[in-house]
Image (cartoon, rainbow, N blue to C red; front, top):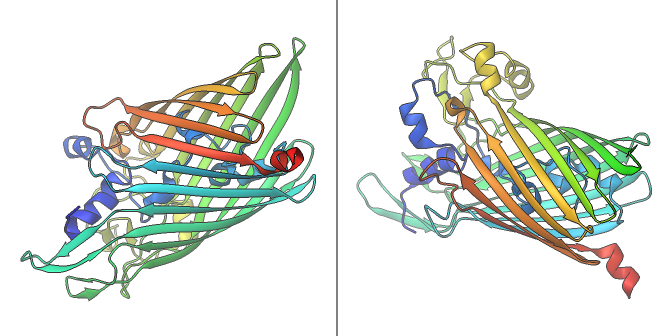
Length: 391
């Protein structure tokens, strides 16, 4: 794949953030929030991907690390591992991929450890100068590795803290406009809570779950030695689910989730922020710190409270299980047209055996010629505890 450095950043700052660039060009009210390392916000697993990207308040599974690591203490199995893979933006290019590896271990009945590795590769990029001169070929990639500790706080509540290292190597050290570049590095943390309540309704076992997670609270990232530093996608996730048991073989789960980026909203005038500060793609080049940016993100939209509400994305999903072995899933994701205009339907299925589970999902946008069209995700997980008992 031959692309210039400029096109690479167009992909990263627009398409990889999953924003509908065609819509933004025609909507006068568009004021999309962009951040660095948007790959952290991509749904990595097939179960959540099949339900409209919901996961913070759903039942626990091996991929809870991305959504809400506090769920791990409610896992029935003591140890498991999962691997997910997704060919990304296949309608545009053929060599961008996302891989996700996760592992958890319950230490006892009240606490657990979990970890994950997320790897995002952008294929082969040929860098050229403004005059078209060959400047080298690189294979840009990004990855994040994290570790989480979860603990049961009561019979129904749990909490977790995760720490994360992020590395984004987009340029391979190339000179860009005469400026030396390097890989961007950052550290971040998640703080999550989870509520799990089993109910008895009409002699059936029902379950109510809810979760909250503040993800990627961390330092800004920079690709040069200059003052330009971009916010990472700090995000507030709120969600809940309700599972109804129809009989001994059939059950339904309904889930809903709301997400909001906790980074400053760009002003209408993209050249200043009231004080002459320059607005850069992915962040504001000013003295606004990460924590200050989190609090300001709830009231800094130029359009007032109405625009703040537009910055919330909504997801809804349904999951059907037969005999706790075969699952069918569907969902819908909505983002306001002024904030990216991602709107799509999803579908998926899963098969769960004693030792392993296999899931896949499919994404169908409601807009034509969308970069996420026909996105597929595949997930494979192993119940290591069950495998050990069979030996």
